[in-house]
Image (cartoon, rainbow, N blue to C red; front, side):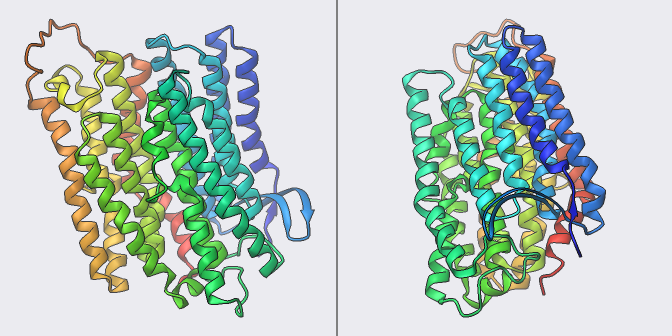
Length: 495
């Protein structure tokens, strides 16, 4: 089926880029500045939503921008795989704009204009990744995300911020240039193109390619997209927690880490392909490789008292569910992995939003200090409880759909070891999330702390996005069909 040529993908990207420029020009007026951010977010989401009917009808939208060499071009493409990421990320940007305004103003943060502009630039890069038609375009926008988010991580401009930002940029650019770039060059020499395959079964590598060469290229790509948080290249992610909480939410739920797993799984399925990965047993090796990250990151999370640090290691663990599902290569497992891109996004942004609201309202960062706060901040901690259930995989929240498909897919693959990993990680999820909610609602304030009734919920501009995101986590658990339509279009060619 011939793809449809349309400028809509480019317009979606330009909405974010234009928003960043207008924010910079309106910096002296915070109301106008945040209005431009909101308008850009709504326009981007509207354009992306307008493409959904065509994609659900099985069509693909492309928009060539320019060609560099035969087989190497900057071209945009919207397919079902793109929409899994793009729909969730563009919608969450709308919530993030409102939340960020409440957070940044509530704490009287400096450089709010730069913050909003870089936020929009990060979404520009993330949507570019989602809409990439080939590995070159993917790599280009991947680097834009890294550059655009560096000032966000260093936002506080203190030594801790600079150290976290330095680790962030060194990890991500070094791995991309040292692993992905050489792999991309070798793939082009082998195939004469960097365009993604039309379906997930075939890939683009020739049949006669050396199995050793293919294996090396494969692991270069898995490890090179370090935004995916796979150990041992995960250290940047906890280090980036020095950034303001809206940035943490952006990093962990909307843009950065999702860009990492999106790139990883896009290359797994559309460059190497299910058939080749199965022939070389690359899928099972990858599944057990990322299982270590799933379990170890959860164990580390148990040891963290700082709420954002615990959530950071939770993210490291949860991202590998996505790669694990795709690596198992069975339709159900791949569906479980891909739907987790959406399920994790809504749940994790809720959790980080809650962490920020707690800090704005109480200036508390540590879980040990949060006893009884649920009774004076019921909306915040109620949403936290809902999002925690999604991370654990309990019904009726979205994460249950993820765990169900991953378990079914593991059974289909005959991988008892992976089933044990999933069950063990679920128990660990309970271990590091349940005590937070219990302590908040049933615990006592820290010894010696006197609460005179002054603590209350954060501003409505923060609480409303929290409640919306938590509510959607429940809705996509009860009614998963809409996003699953995109997922099943991706997996339809897997035999």
